[in-house]
Structures are given as structure tokens and as C-alpha cells.
Image (cartoon, rainbow over all chains, first blue to last red; front, side, top):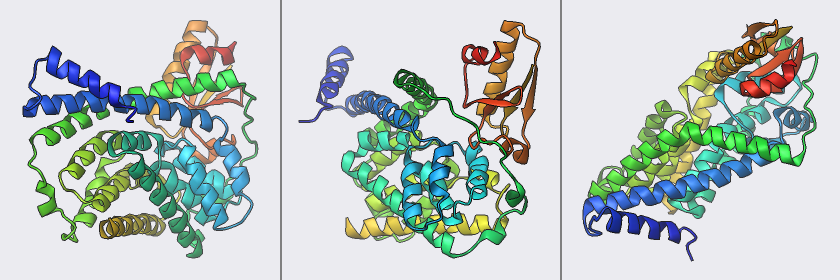
Length: 321
Length: 75
């Protein structure tokens, strides 16, 4: 039983009875798709963002740093990638976070695992993937994103790139650690509610535009039109998808509905996943901000290896699915 | 009273600054609101996420707050 079935009933009623559009017409099917998907996504966004925000009140970056400062690799990469999923990430926090980790002795590779996972696997992408692709593909995305974060961070750690960090980073001393006041359950819930409201407010125009474009593709684009131009046979499709994703940073909310419709029209899963990962993980503004702490060579190696990891994931799923 | 906004100049930092100014005006307290964008200086306060609000050299909160929430720290 599909728990979203009542939404479908509501969309049917609204489109076919209230708007009197025919269920066989293209416009009817596109409008129905738009209403059904928007309602479903906003419900999922509200539930998932609230759950993640609530969990997040227990894991502050300050606590994470304390745990990761014990110098162990691989296990450290795994923990870093896992906490990266729930912790907030705004690219403006990337620099203080990076310095804070390095200052307390978190290995560089472990820091990278966290830096990759935090934007790559986030609650907005998770809710949208779940709503549009189903929980299996959402889980696949999370699992492959997690593995990329662990493996890429581990490799970067082995390359001993410390000399490519700007020197001033090592001179910074954090002489006091911000103390966090004890909060009670009710306040955690209140804080999560506030975060959820703020985040939904931020993404909602993108979601609506994305779903509208997705609905248009759903209704009007010919079946399988992408299978010919961007099918599995076209080896260039994955790298092109990754490149196209770079300038679309932070718009996972708007991009995922479009990708979901393209997927329905024959875009292979691996290519679709690679594109979405590129949108979330590779971003120009983040690169510019990280330039403050990393020398150009390190920045290039970091983004290069993350891009390779995404490419690999794309090809892998195109081959096995 | 001395109030500092620690932040790298991101949209969230600007919002916190605006809200702080509103809170100061509404309460009518005498306070100067300073913006700290220098990274080593931000880090010396021990915060790893920005923006952060500092009142009289003490970090009181991290993240964007509404003017109403900021008032609590100024009273």
C-alpha cells in the first residue's frame, strides 16, 4: 500500500473534477503530476528536515571535532562521513570548520571526508529523492555518497597534502571553546521546528519551479527521447552531466524534480545520479571560499578526486543497472 | 555594551547583523554592533560555525536568530 495514495486521490479530484481537465489529455496529466509531486515533496521535506534538524541538536561541530581529533584513519573517515550527513552545512561555514578541525589535530583526510559528505548528502536532497525516485534510489544515493566521502577522504589523507594548506591556518589558536548551553527536549523540538520552517521557506520556490519543469517534461517530452542522445552507449554523457552540475550549486531542490522526469524519459540511472551528486558536491562558490585555506594545487586535487569519484559512481550504475 | 557578529560576510551573517540592530534599537540599549570578518580573529573565539553572536566578548549563540531571541542576550 502506497502511503501517498490519498494525495493521488486528491490530485485526481482537483484536476479532473474541479479543473475539469481530461485524464487523457497531456495538460491534465502534467497538472496532475505537478500537484501530486508538490504536495508529496513538501510533506517529505517537512518530516525529513524536522527529523534531521532534531538529530542535529545533539551533534554540534564542536562535539564532532572532539571525537575526530583522536587520530585514527579509515574509521575516522567513516565517522566523519556519517556525521557529515546530519550536520548543517553552509559553504560560508566551510573555512572556520576546516580550520577548527585542523587546529585540533583531526587528520586532513578525515576532515575531507566530512567536507565532502556534508553538502553531498543532505536532508533536502534526501527528501526530494525519496519523493521522486522512491526510497530505494534515495538509499542508493546516500550509500554511494557515503562511500565516495570515505574513500576520497582516505585517499586524500594518504597523499600527505598538508604542505598545500595556507601557512596561517597552522598558526591559529582557538583559545576558548564556545560553551553550548544545556538544552531541554522541548527547546530541541522548538529549534528543529524553526530550522525546518526556515529551510522550507528557502527551498520552496526552487521546488515549485523544478516540479513545474519536471511536469512539463513528463507531459510533453517524447518517450525515451533521452535514451538515444544520452543513453548508456554514450560514454561522454556522464562527464558532461558532471560538468553541467557544477554551476547549479545549492539548487538540488530545483534540479532533482527535473532529473526525475528526465530519468523517466530514458536518462540512465548512473548518469542521473552523477549529475545530482555534481550539483550538490562540486560548487564554484565553495571552491572560492576554500581557496582562503587551501593553495590552488590542493583545491584542484580535492575537487578533481571528488569529480573522479562521482564519474566512477555514474559509470558503475550505468553498467550494473 | 559591545556586540560583535562573527561571520565571513555570507547572507546569513548579514541577516544576523540586521536582526541585532533591530533588537538594539527596540530595547534602546547603548551598544555598538561590530562585524568581524577576519578569519583568524573569528577562530580565536572558538566557534566553528558562522554566524556567531558575541556580547561583551562572550560567544552567546551560533546561527541566525530573530530580533526577539537576540533581545534575551542583551537584557
